[in-house]
Length: 213
Image (cartoon, rainbow, N blue to C red):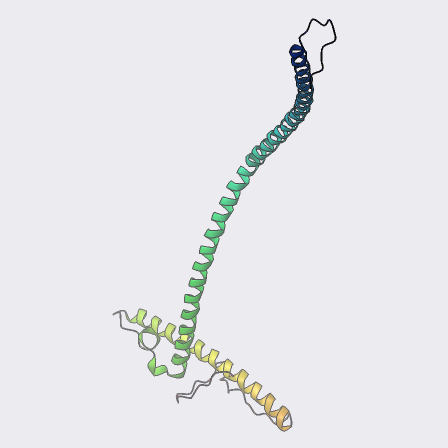
């Protein structure tokens, strides 16, 4: 509400009202500017803090990046070493598998040879080639040497089988004595007679062979 001009005032009543309105607007604008200036200062302070925080984070990022690069450089030789060790491991595993296969094959061959050996001892008539009747080469002396070697092999096999049987008999005697309470003076087994030269007498009659228990 505009007030009336005093008597003798050079201002017109309408002009006075407009002036007061302008003063009110100016005061409002000044207050608004002060508020905006205060907000600007607060925003400026926040911006400075944000920039400082950003700079700090950037420094941390640079430090982490540098550490990462250092670790990668240090781990590169280790990765190469790991790859080499893995290759050696794979190679050793392949060699182990190959050796297992070879051992399995050799074990089968040993079992087969052992079986054939026992058959040759138990049934000499099944023997073939140089173990029984080596083929004649036309050289009598050489053929006799071959026959002598074959006989020697057969004797060794028989002695080996006799040793096995002898051990089995001793074990059975011990078990029999322990079970039946027999007197130790009553032998249940007699060693084969030997010739004056110390060689075992080989009977011509074929005997049945037993495997050890």
